[in-house]
Image 1: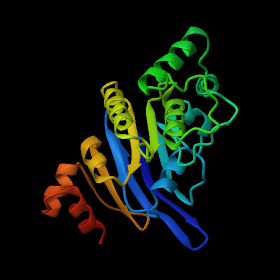
Image 2: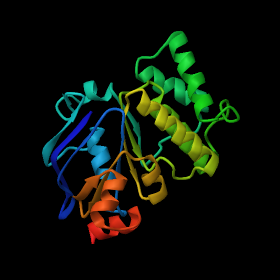
Image 3: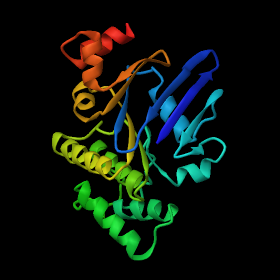
Amino acid sequence: MLEIKKISKSYGEVKAVQSLSFTAHEGQITTLLGANGCGKTTTLRAIAGLIPLDQGSIILNGINVHEHTIEARQHLGIFPDIFGLYPRLTTIEHLEYFGKLHGLKGHILDKAVKNTVEILNMSDIADRRTEGFSQGQRMKVALGRSFIHSPKVLVLDEPTRGLDIFNVRLLRDHLRKLTKEGVCILMSCHVMAEVEDLSDKVVCMADGKKKATGSPAELIERAGTDNLEDAFVQYVS
């Protein structure tokens, strides 16, 4: 479980996140929904322990992320907004490297790499260096390394960007499988169809603040609209 407690973060005079609070539960997909610049990526970076907070706290499975960052990361899988692939490494070498960073080795590591390649349909690029990969191919490698170690909490920043419809369907199926296994998934997204289809809970954001939260159906009902897009516009306007 993730508990976000009144966190704030500013960059100079820009208030990226302002007293934001919400909870993401195990076995559910919670989605941060908002326009570019609303504070989604800053929030996810803070959860990953990549940036310090001005105030507030983030508790991941009972661990304070900013007081015990290394311990918290053992439970966390991260798909960032910047992929940061090593161009001279192959897909399998990337997966092996990140698996080892999380303590996997021997046949357990081999099995995790094989399963990840199969889940994301990467057999055709498994032994290729990532230099020259398409956007979608780089996306899949970055996604694979985020969950190769079977984290209890998975944080995904726009996970479907760059993927074609077939790979989006693969990703959806895998995320649903992970929630059935009790994984807590927090992602950011601005594609309404994806949000409505995948999310158990949605946090609508604007200007670094939470404007509304609830399931897609609850948000639509409270707004008195016919769809999530109209409901979102109403909440953040």
